[in-house]
Length: 258
Length: 321
Image 1 (cartoon, each protein chain N blue to C red):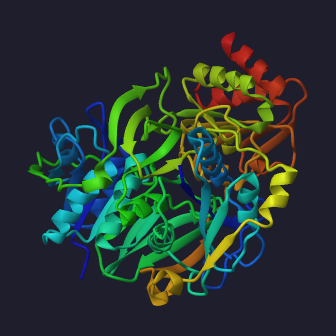
Image 2: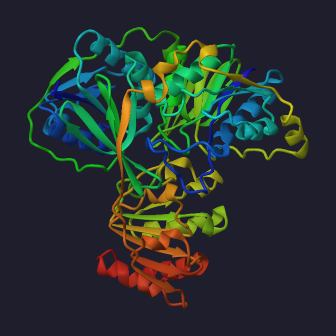
Image 3: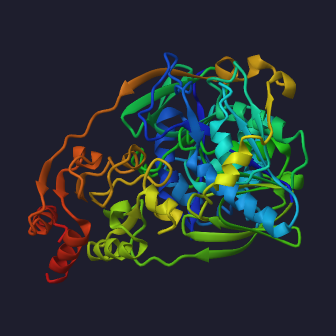
């Protein structure tokens, strides 16, 4: 079973985000593997293990050629990575991103394409389904459990009220919600091995994509302004003296909730 | 070309139109004179309600027989639009199925999407949409530079729903073309997880727990308190990622947006990713042992203390009443 996992390298969410003058997110520093993607990588590794054959390939896109986030996923056990990097990519919208990823994925045959439901920095949440549409594949989003039985995909798909059981032939695209598996920590051996695993760097030209059709130039949208949101004011803050629960009760009483 | 026609992807559960869809209809009416609701299901029992909220026409695919809405509704909409009946704007809720339909349709029409918006306004011939970024501290306003249909998704509770007493709309069938391989997934069973209280994004009181709870078993305190206040339990992303509670509990940028009368944050430090999902609450009460936790900057009442002490005391006091 050969699985492609779409992963994204993002600015460290623990650091405050910074915007470039064109209002797009600054991405020129060190980038890390989006934690949301670690679940897809883990599920992919487990599915390949269960199948007893095949490998996990990472597919990613980044403007600046950064690979350190990919090394994290390679250290977990992915076999190799395909990284699309091009000066024309900054400002790419969700559809542009999907076109680039679909072209990169489409160069090889995969049984399954996995992705997170959304990235932690842009959180558009449409890219994997757009990739599926571009590749003409079926898809199941918001998976909380993924198994393959006799070559058929079985997914528990999160819904507002509970979950659905969905069956789907392969190849297919699946997005996984966070927290559904425990992503493995890279072992020392894994970290060392990751340094020499292949990262195939491609440009838009290699994929036959016109640079003018993606990024700021071609995304069909323009950020016209970024303004400060109205700030909420802090209220009363008290140290717990063993009786502060009574303050909460009084507050709820005032609102007639108790 | 001014904005004349807005379509709304409408959703229902158990024969009732979802609140987000009614909110979108209210926004659609303020943007355009012609408002059409699109259903990826049978219109029976739903059309009148959509009419009351301003839809003059309903396009309905009928039952999907296990097909997922993403590919089926998107293909049906694309065929209709490519056949010449094209709206200026299509509004989707930021929901499980809304995102799927929007994504598939964007590929079929080769049109960009603008997602997760909290405001949508017309500006001459185009739309300006507002997205909260960096935990809601900044508002990014974005416009489309090409032609429509403009595909826009909106977070629940961004606008109030408003019934306008419209009559029954006309209902037209929306034909689903052959989906080929893309439509091969089938829903074989539907599971409803019973919850005794109100829904997280509709509850008047939300009690959420975070990493400060220490361990999964302590989430029980959050559930007890929520139940006592007739509210819903929620969670920070940290404990969803840790597997303590399901994704459906998550409040935040990548979870649900809640705007209850009272939001009680227990052991939540207030990562920006969480704050964007709850800072619209009317009143915020926070309990956290770290005096410098960002949650205290937006709380109306902040208790610097141990949730393992304060919550049991609070629960006991409420039970005693």
